[in-house]
Length: 485
Image 1 (tube, rainbow, N blue to C red):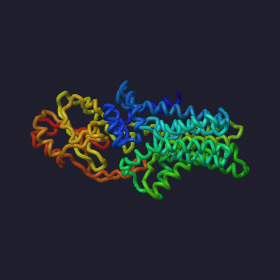
Image 2: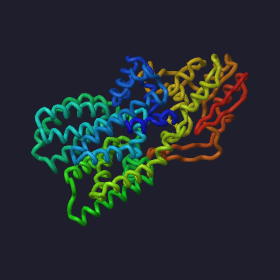
Image 3: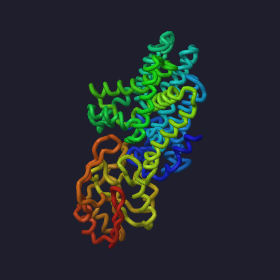
Image 4: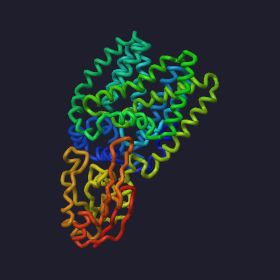
């Protein structure tokens, strides 16, 4: 419950960003159209979309509604980690691990993100618990492990690398269980191979991922778990370092099996993804390895317990220090522009929905310098805000063509459209006189070029139809311009 509340609190405030806009675009269509989308473009998220669609049919497409299932998943992941860590040590350690998980900035983000990452987090913990139980008890427990492994891989394909981490752990600690594990994994691989072939055919969907480099490895260290939060990185680093020094000085590692499991879970999926990315298809983006974060929580909880020994107050101090270090990032994530890159799609849509009158027209500019898509993404993000407005329509409709995004009509088409409009609300790039660059979320650079609406082609077309500017409202990156005849 604590995890659900922490994740859900303030989740209604940040604007949707591109990935979340893709979620809204996917679930805001018929099942036939959704099947067409995942068949052609976004199959890797098919299971998530199919489960989220009936939820949004009941509760709507608001920021809170679409994000709340992720909050539930994070709460479930924390509870599952308590169960796993209790089995690995004891209940106080389990509670510590579950609470530590909730302080990790990446988990704070996943719990308020309208994507599949929180679900991956939960499935990874359950799968690892099943590994530990099956390794001890064998028999039918391996069947349960296989079923959850299939679900985890179909839910988010890179979760397949967790199986490699589990294999390494068994080699190190419980080789007697490797036969049952091996048979199960072979069966899993056979059963998921059609899905793997299917999504491999859609690999162009991740063609935007930058090539692997040393810089990308550094990005992993700072962004995968800490989302750029230096305070949390420093506190976590100190806690682990002190525990490792204590272990070296005493020549002993308490709960060595737990220690081995945490490191295998933390590092091996990343190593597999990095090797593949260096030698072939680019697979890595910060957040794709979110299912390894519980391993970090186990390692931090182990470190706190190792340092504290019998003094439980030290573990409380460590937990408070981690929570304090995470607080600035938690608050930043829940600001109005707290999503990747400070996107403002929701704010723009909500403003127009609140101020435009039924029958007013709306125009969407082409792709700004910092975006791969036209400003029609705002319409697909907040469709309800434009329901009573007149829109020129897309050149190619996303829902009808199995795409995520509409293909816009040329800007030149707006002159004829504007001739029938008394009021036009224009969604366009924000005013700026200087160029700048952002590096959001450890991803590719976003380039913001100087822009003035009155110098744009869209302004020339609409003003040529007899409309003039009567108001402007600036948002974080975009602006809304009101034009009237």
